[in-house]
Image 1 (cartoon, one colour):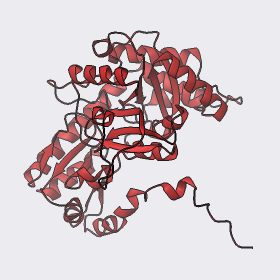
Image 2 (spheres, helix red, strand yellow; image 1 turned 90 degrees about the vertical axis):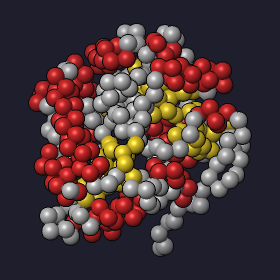
Image 3 (tube, one colour; image 1 turned 45 degrees about the vertical axis):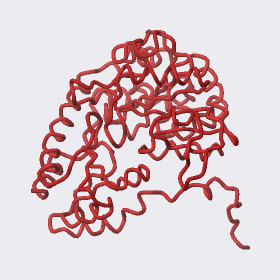
Image 4 (cartoon, rainbow, N blue to C red; image 1 turned 120 degrees about the vertical axis):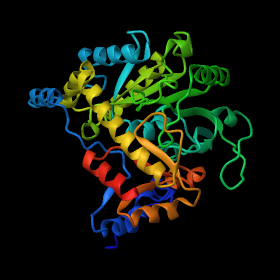
Length: 382
């Protein structure tokens, strides 16, 4: 019997090629370097999970029952406390744990009831999953320099005009991959526009605590200076993957408009989006402990200083990169030419094209490598 084939309308048929597959030949080339491969592509943490978090995970590992989608009161209180400390939002803010932030980004349009005839806007240089979320919801993906551009006759890739009704706009500050930061005034203008346009404004803030420029501190959309204490139509996504090295735990959360959070909770309860109980308990420990996060931030800051100096000395220009865990760099040439040049030195960096057509002359260097790997890369660039 012939194997069953995917129907032509299958979501898998609508998705673009998984971008990292294109890196395979360059990874092989870099691995052939006498000193071996230094991989600075994916932003996956390499440092140990703090002991206090691991202990909390172990202590909760014997629970045999199902966790709840909303999480226990102690988890919600930990999320609210952390948000209040870092964003200034009121301590009764509505929160919702998520199974990492990537599944949230990919599922949010559909879970908000967005579908055919609607549009989802996101930055034109951005994390690719914003586009995937729109595609999975059968909505129109709309990459724009500014989400306010999508309110009028925005132009799609290929010169076609947008026809979808804008329902959701993603913003990402600090941005991946560029490291850009938005000011209070910029965010206020976006909030005002979103409310006037009846658009949900979703802010991906996974790098909020990793600002490197004192004159450009990252600001949350939850900050009362941005929204005057009114969270209507606003959602903010946060993650412990980078702050606490918990990428493997899939621990993240959403906060904002209480009505939207309540709707999402009900949908996610039906669909079974449950963070494992032991991970919920580990998250509580992580959110109440700032010491380990400060130590981890210091590691990244030291790696950033070492790598940035070497990248610039090698003739690159670094754009933005005021926050986050990446250097957004260019040599003024096609990104694949740069990727090849680096691979000849045993260094693998992410092609800027992965993040949108406008990124095709940049590469992204990740700071999520060991001290030795960063030092090795810096030496090879000299």
